[in-house]
Length: 87
Image (cartoon, rainbow, N blue to C red; front, side, top):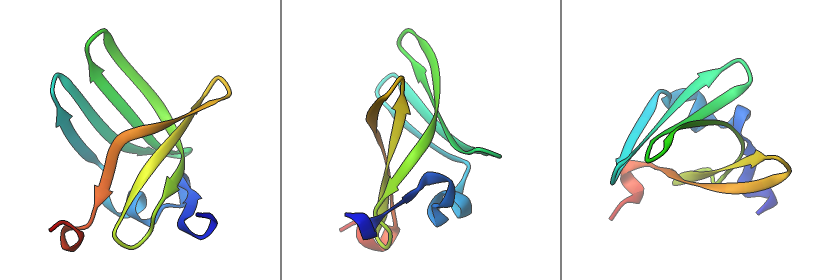
């Protein structure tokens, strides 16, 4: 896993493909860039929350993202998959 992870701010996928958007049920997720890195914003339910992505796992076929909040780590429900990796 060490070789399949990168700081999210250095993720080529995030650098080259933002802004990104996706909808799941009553929730909407958008990914935008800032000087600090990739900001994931989720809107729905009780309101809106934004977090900075800390880690990106995966390289060639796709990535998933991890956030840190108050000393705990959370995996995003958002994954980026290249078209050729989806069967």
